[in-house]
Image 1 (cartoon, helix red, strand yellow):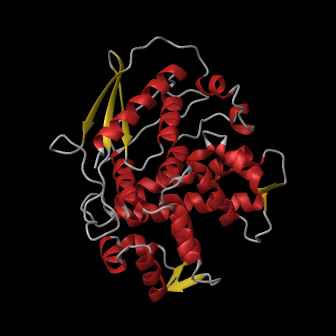
Image 2: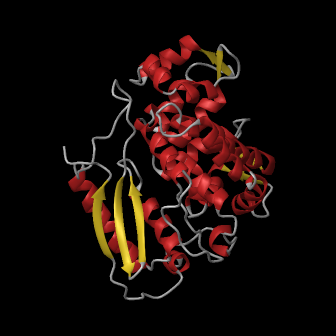
Length: 342
């Protein structure tokens, strides 16, 4: 464990990506958990219907899962460490932990997840969040991505608890520094934000969109050198977003792309949903990109990934220009259509 699969040179304004074995395995199981087959909005609404209490018992957890089409006892038997991490006592589950992992693991467009995240942060339900509220939100998100969601990878003969803890302990050292940076990205000099301002800050920032999924948060923790430029401190307009994002003219590079699958048979596996077949995690398709001699990278693609966000983040990491990124997006859209035809 621990060898890196992709690397990219560090620059002040771009995040370098280094996916190690632990991260790849954790991300696979997060993407294959029962919660990942449902929308974040549906998941959160179902659990919030249980009432105003900060905790729920097993019967309530079982009822909510059943309403969602998730077999609760199979869920617990397949993901015991993950379920255990959601508890606040031997007999009860912490509803805030559940809501947070539902937002992080569930499906949904970035703007929809932003709205759910604001509701989570707005404890007083007054449509206003303060600097302190945002600090707590960021702390909770980081904790969830290091302590809660990685537990989905335990018990499948891939990673041990010790291996995951060691990996996450290395990342948690950057927590305070990351909170400070992200808090400024969100709040700037403001003391409070309403829901529309919060939405604009998150949705218009390539960096901040990483906080709505656990893999993105861990990547940010690994890459503390990213720049707090005007790109991340203020909304990006449609007129300047392209130039600000790519930051350079077309290089004329000929991107050679080739699809391969992690499947032994050479074709993508059927995605596992939250039904009786939860034993094996979804395996991503891997797109090999050849930038030139000795310049090869991989893009891991899951069935439910938001392609626009996926490609934009990849383009930022690997310094692709707009023409290259648009070509990559079109290519991937065709790949996914062909690969998952029913």
